[in-house]
Amino acid sequence: MNVIGNGVVVHVPGLFEEIAEMQEKGVQIDGRLLLSDRAHLLFDLHKEVDGMREAELAGNKIGTTKRGIGPAYASKATRNGLRVADLAHPENFKVKLAALVNDAQKRFPDIPYDMEAELAAYEKYAERLRPFITDTVDYLHDAHEQGKRILIEGANATMLDVDHGTYPFVTSSNPSIGGIVTGLGMAPTKFEAIIGVAKAYTTRVGAGPYPTEIHGDLGEKVREVGREYGTTTGRPRRVGWLDVVALRYVCKINGFTHLNLTKLDVLSDLPEIQVGVGYKVKGKTLSSSMPASIEDLESAEVVYETLPGWKQDISGVRQWADLPKAAQEYVQRVEDLVGVPVKWIGVGPGRDAIVIKG
Image (cartoon, rainbow, N blue to C red; front, top):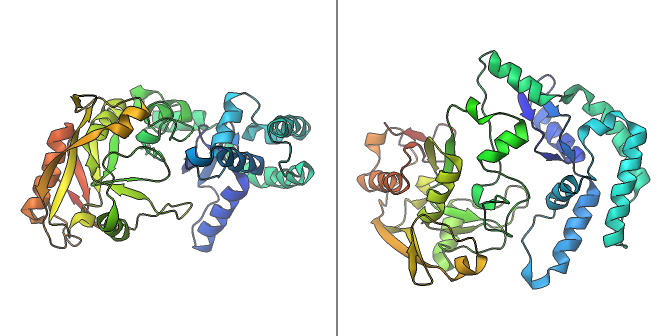
């Protein structure tokens, strides 16, 4: 069973598009998908607001995907948002949507939006969604009490967390460990393993400070080899060397029990690899404290450690002992620097392209 929790903002037309794509590939959806009745709805109105807000920022743009995510979470925070549960009450749904539209049009009078068409569409969506809607908090707790295994996956990354990330160049929610508690209603006492997924280098989509960013031909090479383009937008991702300061910080916040170090194979053709092990900020060297100020982060001078590359294809390797010595040393050095064991190492795009470190 797949569960979309209450912490997600849901664009219903987009959800149905994804369902259709899965069904075309032969994936059975009926009886395998649940949607929280407490999840907030993301309307096309939110997308329009997102684009207009970004346009106002001119040279100081955040780099939003313009998918309406920020405005949808803003509606949630200002308590004029609509939730999935509201679909069961069409008259109140209409009143609440009118209030949401009115609020947006006060800020952006020229916003193009056909509320009547939206209401008609959501009347149909409500019927189609009904089989998927449930109290997912109750469902998940029942599953846990029955001893079922629960795998929770988060989107984005901790450095895009609205509280702990490079604010304001962040997303609008908490894609860190706290998002599990608030976004699913699962108590932390129920967590058994907390696995951090980190690339063997770093990437970022959109604007914001990026101390270890690789520029020029080398950056382009890493981007192409790693196929680093945004999943939803297709935008080229920015790429950089592994940032241990950020990774240590992220490990503290999330309490990782293990790390999954992915895309090690992307670095295979490099003669040497740099790892950012510290920042010099205002005359001080930081190794685990992450600057809160964007200005400090933008001015940070990275302290690098240079490690030898391995210059050979590792995509067919499946045993730790078969990795080149330099690749083993790179993984071990990362583990030593962050203080969290690296358990899994990705060496290619295939699902089986994983090396388990003993």
